[in-house]
Amino acid sequence: MITAQLLCPKCQTPLPAISEPGRERHECIACGVISEIETFPAFFQQAAVGQAGERILIEGEAGCFYHSDKKATVHCSGCGRFLCALCDVELNGQHLCLGCLESNQRKGQLAELETRRTVYDSAALSLALWPILIWPFTLVTAPIAAFLAVLSWFRPNSLVRGGRLRSIVALVIATAQIAGWVVLFGSLFLKQQ
Amino acid sequence: MANRPQFYRRLPGTGKTIAHYVQLYQGPDHLLQVKLSGFTEEYKRFYYRDIQALVLRRTHTGKILNSILGGFAAIFGASAFIAAGSGGEFPLGFLAGICFLFLLVNLLLGPTGVCHLRTAVQTEKLVSLGRARRARKVIDRLRPLIVEAQRPLAAPAIAAVQSTPAVVQPDSLASL
Image 1 (cartoon, rainbow over the protein chains, first blue to last red):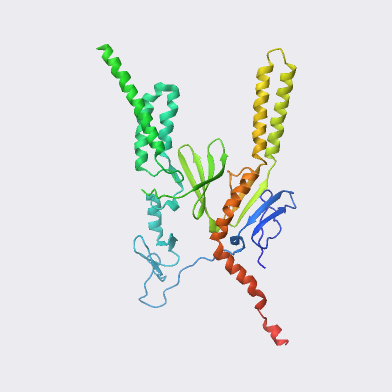
Image 2 (cartoon, rainbow over the protein chains, first blue to last red):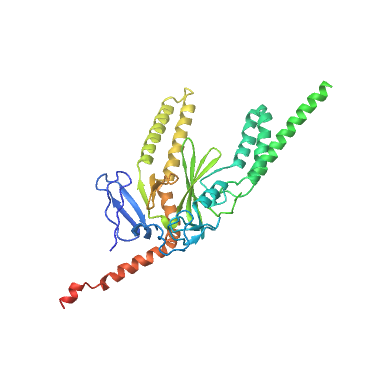
């Protein structure tokens, strides 16, 4: 039977071996902490060995673009270059070379590889709302908030929050603030006239 | 710019520190941990097929907090009682009430815990699951998704276990 072992999350002492997936409770013999452990089939699998790419044995066989001595097994879906098993990166059913992968990540074309996003709509909304507490600041912050709200339409929003409500609300508030300042300065100007 | 519609469902729990919030989202084939710091979101993905174990450990943080809050509530309450009639009972009573309210909230949230997610290459603390009850709820929601994603892994393992008795050693054949 396949068994695997976990370490105590507190003191890193090995816990009793687990033989099948499911929920178990274990008490650490060293620190006495009780852990509820939910294991899944992947826990009992041995790490898969990566492929190194086959060497070209017959002359004239298609070789990898990056490793000329390795046999090409697939072509890159992005640039069409021949790739060996070592260079092939499979993502969403697509085979990509490292160059295309990096360039797609840089351009933000692969949402699966994104690790960070700036949420312009939240920034716009905060900048439109908070300065109201010290209203003279809105003279400076309102145009910035309006700019960020417009910018957020052309930039990817949060990965987990959909919709454009924040941008719209920010734009409306910022526009109202700008309009307020225009009216104020206009009336002052007219008074002086 | 790619703004592909991704269907994420927010999971209970928010981890808070001074600098950021951490929340968990259930994706179609992965668990997404979002760290919100200022106006930047940082993402960490844990694919269901890679999750090996979820480990929940109870901590004493909640009990300690209860003791502290209970202590303060009692001190302020007693002080308010002693100061009755002098005018000081109102601010002291208010403070006792605040402490009692926090104590009540902490009691209602239940025991505290630390939840870790383990894959073949990492053990990640799930900061947003700071309460044992909430962590169990999230684990219950994730379990069917992980099991479903790992169904292809479970089948060969069972087959391997079942096929073990069928193996006959050449030595044992010779002895027949």
